[in-house]
Length: 107
Image 1 (cartoon, rainbow, N blue to C red):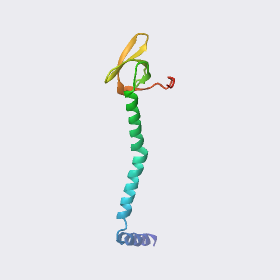
Image 2: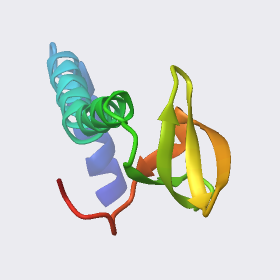
Image 3: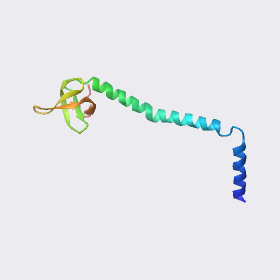
């Protein structure tokens, strides 16, 4: 009896004019807004901050590479930096693999 009752209700709901179209589009817009608010917007903000950090690199800044190497910038070029690792040991590192050293004092 319950199955028959549910089937009749579903048929009546399906035959109602304009039942699902408006609510479908409203739900899609809400889902996109939530996606943008919680995923796309923060990611763009992080990308802009990383871009600003990389463009502001200067000699003497303490950084960490993506591989976990701590060092101090010795020379800055367009696409890479020379990183002073220990004593007179210098390595060439791509700018995109650098992040700020959290142990360095804030300026």
